[in-house]
Image 1 (cartoon, rainbow, N blue to C red):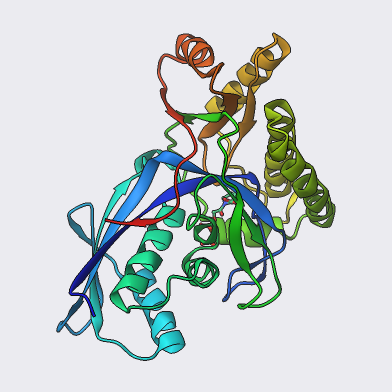
Image 2 (image 1 turned 135 degrees about the vertical axis):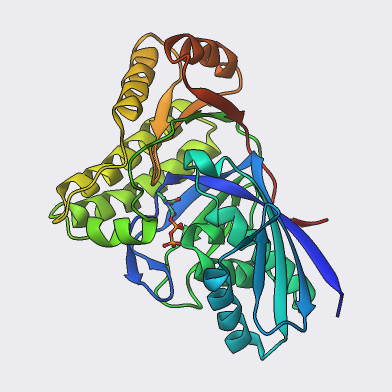
Length: 318
Ligand code: 2P0
């Protein structure tokens, strides 16, 4: 066994969202989902065995609460046999402070690093299953470019796979909107959303949209990709507003960026939104339009920070 193993995984943004579970403990989703892995945002994680009495986590050079990763490592001990305590050092290159999720890249990088440390076979499906146990969306971050997480119905059948490895010219502009609002965790948010009377209809529509999305990607039809992704994401946020204890990740600034993006599309630009469990907006466009759109966005929202992201690669060892 190696002494120390370092792996990197990129975060991903879903074009067809995961928003609900049929099994909370195993992270089995109510819908299959499809994402693009982003090149500029990633987590680098090193793992090594230690004589310490507990697993530990150093995140961005600071000691962190290790309970969530320790639970994850206990799950791995259950799957693969007992192993010593682990010291984890992780660097997040994801603007987490602005609410861009990092659990996807974090658990994908940790999974890859642990597979290296334990000398397990580097089977993508198995790595995806294990990453899923840490955080559902991490199942997709094992892969580069586009990944589909087929929902499955139990641990064995629920994992992601690479969908399409060519660059179709899709770009995302991430608008970082900081929020004073208390954040609702994804796990809790999904649970509430599932109580919306329209939730079943959203799930049914999602299956149709996934099929359409796959076709649009294969045809490199960015307009179709954007229109479907936008409808799917706005539908997800509707469930949050319609559930038994309504909540909303949108701030007024989120809504302004959404409205402005829709205006840009009406004016003839390729511009669509997708939004996750926070106030940030990811604007879907293409490589040819990204700079023009960025100039317009910066002029309209001088107070915001924008990052352009293109498709990134699969996990790798460093
Ligand atoms: C997604 N999100 O498909 C959806 C869309 C946020 C909105 O997956 O409970 O951190 O750890 O499995 O993966 C974020 O949820 O949730 C997420 P858990 P996760 O990307």
